[in-house]
Length: 315
Image (cartoon, rainbow, N blue to C red):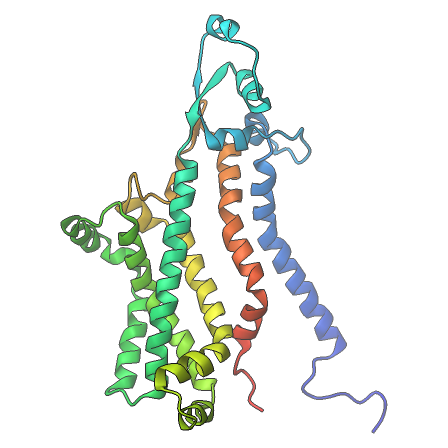
């Protein structure tokens, strides 16, 4: 065999370079909007709406101050009567002839997103794991029909049933509650979780469980000590997909909440500044809003990469 011979399956050097260029270009195209949001959070309101857009500017934390505070404009006489500012952010606000009236609602809305997003993700993965195990291991009557029915619920746009859900929630007293959003997001995500996790469960050899049962384990103990550890890659990948939907969902959060349980997505666009939207504050809020999902994905990135390719090639 000559030294220049290569596998007919492996791509040539030219194709690898072309693929690398396409992947890099795609990554840059996806990162540019995120990068622009990030730098807008450090602009002043005037720089944020400047045309042509400013790439080089004097950084300011005014956007982050505005997203966490409520400010009121005062007369010059009132401003002159105030004692010297005690903090840098108080001085920054006073430079606009304004004073801080109190904290904004962003912190509460952000906490609501944490409660709803991670609560719905946990409940979805928990129920989806049990259902997927049952479909994978037991003889369920009309299994294929049930699985198709579960999948069909994902094909329907959730917003198509917004009005019935709103009326039902109003009757049950679930409007503007954390529990209401958690149950709704769980119902929407559960079909995806069942189908993803069933594929992972099918790839785990039954012989492991049978050996555990012969050794005296109960079915529940075999599931907990044998199946779950091997299914962790699939569970992690499913959790990430479920969290992304629950975290970013806008339409139901806008329709079903208004105060106590409102999440960050419908709140961030309502941040108002002088003469309209405070774009640095909106960008700062959006940047902070992306951090939990980014951290969660980075922590589970190894499981995610293994999870999305699990079972792709059988030995």
